[in-house]
Length: 398
Image 1 (cartoon, rainbow, N blue to C red):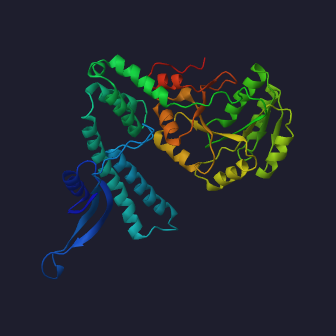
Image 2: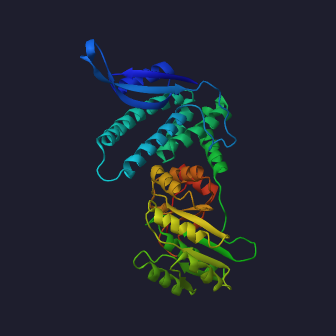
Image 3: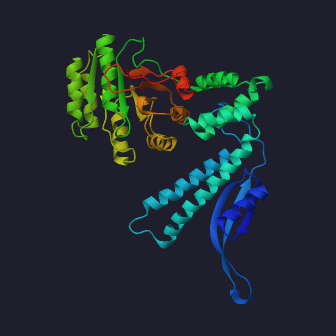
């Protein structure tokens, strides 16, 4: 690894020096303002920017997972910077009361640095795309325009670029076909919530507010009760949201199944034991901010009461990659078994669904496509998602 220190009059000039000396793969290790003394007694001193950057010249072997694994290039720089931004952001948020002057300056510099880095990364991305066939680069832009995370999209097209022949690369139909196959191969799904195995199935649904957990639970309960003729039961732990219990009670009455209210995690085992005849028990939880640590701790306590509970993290397909990554990160301390995406009918792009699955390393269980109970829900499949991403399918809730 080569590490070098740069000084410049401003950050933009410093980044140009870094790129010119170490190339687009350089990693920014630190930045700070320093006072540069010139002349006798420092009478002509001035503030300059000091940047410490590094570049690793060692070959890096691609990890076994071609999509989840890292690749050399601007991805590593971006990942490092994201972590640095996160640390500084957390320091700012955790500072009590009025922010000290130095911390205020840091916040301002962070915004400025982020803009410069994003510009540098965009330039680096263009350099990376030059190594791809023009049609492969076009396919990359298509994936990004459909909401897929740029890092993941680039990893996909790198595989395509290495796999396809020159003749195939000149045929966009071939690229689309192989591209869809590659996306499908990366998609993992769980299948039905109740499989062919005998025994009771217990599932809990967690997630941020407003994603439609209660309605989704009602759809699953109605399907398995009215269509599959299984005995289902509901338990709600959502006494936080006004009207949540009444909403679930109405659904339960229409479907014809019982519902229990649990006020604390310790009551969960008793509620489950009272449902001995139920083949499927669905547990609703409060829809609160994923940034509420007390809520996360409460869910962790709830999950610890029963080992065989499957946990579905419910997310909205309308959310951006940034929001989804934040939510998944906040729930990292909970043993999530699968991701369930709602509001596909409201989403215009579906690449973020794929990206969330890759980043979370969790399979997909269900998609919901509207408000109707129980019609607007479907099993997540690799073919369905790949076709949605490439605009080969439409989401219909009619």
